[in-house]
Length: 429
Image (tube, rainbow, N blue to C red; front, side):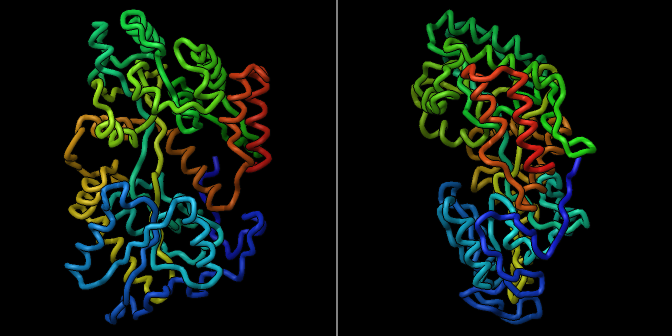
């Protein structure tokens, strides 16, 4: 499996429709419009602009830590909160104008500016950052490190389970198989009259987790670059098709983009296969029933899909040393713990012990699922991160798109799997 990326001056043709203008590692793109000090040589670094998206929605954690850093060091870190849809374009334009900020929190490394980033490999080792979520080149150069993690997970309407007198696993012992889970949920439906047994987000992120739990290796390139999968993928997808029967699962979610979150919050759905990002929403917005996070079923594999919610990059230039120092400070144990607790993050370091103000049990469960997920999850994630950094992508989402066609009975299972393979081979092989 290809898990690394080559560090190049230019990825030719990597970004369709983008004019990549002379970006090399020596062009000094790390300066900002707000000041260009001497960085790490003892001079005033000026104001460090930190581009990110959604800090206010995540408890203002980065703003809080920037203020704390200023109090401790006298260095000003200016949080520039940009709408998520605009962040990628804003950074690309800044790169082409040689006016990148000091650092940024991004969804993925972009070939337009990847070669003007500071190597962060020492931070990974020093702070026990999850290496499989760092964007790493074949030469060991680390372009970005994860700031936090998300993971797929399962929620139950605890009130319905209690009304039906049906038990559910509360610890990582005797965890349901998918067969046992479906049987239990059907019992709850029958006893309570709930309309649906489960909603599952219309997302390949969720579907990948489901496939892994059946033992799927997902789609990986062979020696000739052709993407292949194993028999467990067929087993899982057939099982998934059978669940989408408008009784156990509403077909409208995957076929008509109905909102699984809203359906679960209505109280008329027994369970919801979604992820860790729902915890804050449910704590704030569900008042009519009790909900609980539980371990995802295994048939037979423990392998929730997880990934970096976002990653941090430091740009080369006059302020690079000062920006690096801030990131190094941010990942120090006490500071990173404060960031994670303020923002409600699942930690991206392997040794962080986070105490959350609310729903500690739910966060602990997710952290345990991530720590014990089958290795294939991290391997596939690293492969995908590599493709992103190389500017390689597919039209649409092959796995989600072809499975939707299969669920709608437009194509059979074998054709769906072959189509996914063909589309990924064309894009990445």
